[in-house]
Length: 545
DNA sequence: GTAGGGTTAG
Image (cartoon, rainbow, N blue to C red; front, side, top):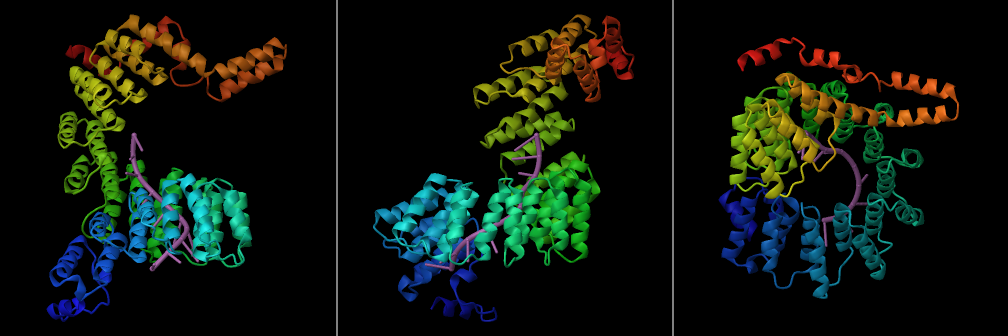
């Protein structure tokens, strides 16, 4: 009935068999729903289940709507229960799958063979081991343990949640071991870093498919073993976008950004098209390299792939790339063009502006963010404090530091404290900076002291510089503590050879050669030299005052 | 209508 009417209105469009295939957006879904409401459910008894299926499973981001529809059904059948569990399990909030299952049980609806793979998927995504074990028990209780799908999902669940012995036992007991659980188990071992076992499983597979290869390649990649990954990559009989993505992400992870870009070139030359995952890795590579040209090309590639809205993830990566490559205007363009934003979006743009010296814009955006009730996190405040520091806004900076602690209950970390020392120090409030460090609840690190020392240098405060230097020196002694300790042990045993070896080790490893170390161990004259080193910037600062 | 692989930043 529905189909007929719809086709009447659009006779030229290709005919499709079901509603859930036809609906590709929330809007289409609502239209279908409205149609059914107007014409009565009797006109098409299966219409509602199809709409729910579309909302829960087929279209992403419409699970809420499916929940609303579901709430109006007085007696859902198993298909509808399962559909809702399935959709929830794959949604951003898999916990709903569990609660729907509970409701199903409360209403004495018996789960069937379709139910368990879905709830187990939810447990896997939640890493909810206890709950998963509970469902494992129910599988046995309902007599589903020999169902291939359920068994394979159980293996996947246990392998994914680190219960490899259970996964292994289930696998070993299986009458027929097909490639799906075989790969799942391999992935489980690889994820835990047990590449030897993973590789053995991989080698023993009677049949391998693309996923098996990808699992093994990804295993190597995740452990940073790019050479082994590359060897397999060269041998793999067939590659898909996941294979390429694994390699590209691997190179980025290892900091081999150039190689990642080369890999992408190669990917294009064999006609494999990138997807959003490819682009995410590549943007990260460009950001790291500061390669704006490459970044812009990747951006163009992205526009070819996804017409319409950018995902938050991609938008954030773009902002970050443009900001790190020095094109803050483009970063802002992306920011303005984003419909949905999360806290990371704001962080990227606030931090980007701050690090490029656009302090006012950065702080303005922070104010706007708060107005829009987006809750800042600790990273937001690093950006804000950097902005204040660059702009010399001491009181504002102090205010935000307190706001972070008092209103948002965020404990200052070492970076926030470093920013505060920088802020006070740059502004010439050296005594306050010193007091700030002393009042810190966390242990100051060498960077904090060096920041203060740098500020003392700028403002020519010898006395405080000497004190900061002493503290830095203590710090360095601590850092080389292990060596000194060992060296002393050798000495106390009269093993002078060992002492010599340790000294050599200390020299070789750079413990005594770190930048600034010579200064720190040096006498006052060297300290003075450092402080009054006639660098142009220093001269101009003095003459401006 | 059911199971396995890849995801930014700080």
